[in-house]
Amino acid sequence: MTIERADIEKLAELARIEINEATIAETTQSIADVLALVDQLQAADTEGVEPMAHPTDAIQRLRTDEVTETNHREDFQAIAPATEAGLYLVPKVID
Amino acid sequence: MHDKTIAEIIVGLDAGDFTSVEITQHYLRRIQALDSTYNSFITVNEASALAQAEAADKRRAEGNAPVFCGVPIAHKDIFCTNGIRTSCGSKMLDNFVPPYDATVVENFANAGAVILGKTNMDEFAMGSSNETSFYGPVKNPWNTNTVPGGSSGGSAAAVAAHLAPGATATDTGGSIRQPAALCGITGLKPTYGRVSRWGMIAFASSLDQGGPMARTAEDCALMLNVMASFDPKDSTSIDREVPDYTANLNQSLKGLKIGIPKEYFEEGLNLGTEQAVRDALAELEKQGATLVSISLPHTKLAVPAYYVIAPAEASANLSRFDGVRYGHRCEDPKDLRDMYMRTRAEGFGDEVKRRILVGAYCLSAGYYDAYYRKAQQVRRLIKQDFVDAFEQVDVIMGPTSPSPAFEFGAKGNDPVAMYLEDIYTIATNLAGLPGMSVPCGFVDNKPVGLQIIGDYFDESRMLNVAHQFQQTTDWHKQAPEDIEVGGIE
Picture (cartoon, rainbow over the protein chains, first blue to last red):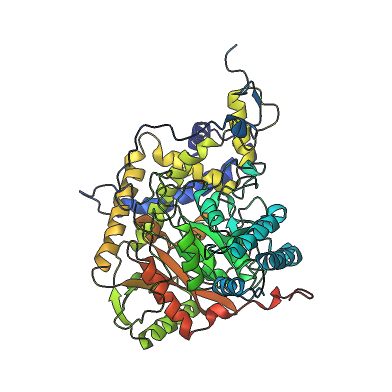
């Protein structure tokens, strides 16, 4: 499978990472190299093999619906880039 | 004093030969004097290490202190430490001071351990040479022109240079075992789910596992006794009793069956490394173990499967770094999209960006089945190889890495060459099995590691084997020449 500059631009948009114009050719090449490596998987015979998401096939543990955490909003917001009145500030989204 | 193992420090503290304050001061002075050479620490905990040591001495004086009380260690900078900056080796978290402790950190605090500082690492644990750290590469204490391995290169170098008697680390594809091998120390990656991942900054959640690095297997056992726990806060933590990992160290190896996978001794393995590993196996035979030839037929597919699964999980995990709640935010964003795009472009390094993009590709519409689903199927085949092998043998052994430490920049422009550095370690992460690296010789004065892979939750047996090996060999007692400094005895 070949990957081109336009694919990298689309991925960068999906991943929300601005890609520098000067390095996009190099980025495209190195990602193509990685994908060539992973393409070796296509040769494997996996007919009927169940995909494995967890090493010991453990299932999600459930707990009783009880409040166990206390409020740490001030601690958490003390390290935020911008807050006001207990809210996180971001650039204006809606005019 | 810095020649002492953790076991010896515990004996010394018990006997009153020295205090925790004295040994903590000693290590802080050594870090001060030597770490400008090795760059193994990102943050030194001068501020509170001595207060922790004083508290530990007081607790010991009062009696009934835990075994580990007063022992100084370092934490990899991936474990959140309340009030101590936790960078994960990234500009993205250069200003991040967590408001809470990781469970591993809390376990050590409860045991009375002293935190010397936070160790350097590849950015977000993505790398095998420590060259991707925002804080600059760590130098291998055995040869400062060579890499210490990665991603836990700071923890490995700190232990090898005797700047800490032990350090915590994490292993997603070999990040404990490969640097342990390259720096000539002992490291253990436990079974997936044995050590809590809570507060350990996530890279690939189905593969990440914390573990100890130290100079001996006995010290790793002492550290694992503290680290391992069932943690309700980690949904993948396994609810299973934690044994005393020191209990079986002295068992004889008579009758032990060691599986030798032929795939781990094929083309690409350095001849000196192979010789050191074969000599180690012969030593274990002398102790009564039997070598059994086995095959792990899907070995070659482990690296390709890993480089789908790990980037896919990383692309999801690292989406949380958006400049909103903590960490880096770009200057003067003009709108929300601009803030995300520039914050992430500025905060992440090249390797991290590459993996996020690869992960996004493998998960994107139209490619999911061809890549992610396929890799998860191959993952089961790899696991089944091991399950079949453990029907015949007790442990599996081979080299930890294909060659000893390489020079800085040697693989810098070729990500695929770097990825192949973990060819012998990655399969155990995919299978979720425990693995260790133990020093077993040198090639051109560079350390070589013997890898020991155990069955699920069989850490005690691996530690037993490693400890017995260390009773009749002295590779783990070797130290680099340049780590002594005048005036600090």
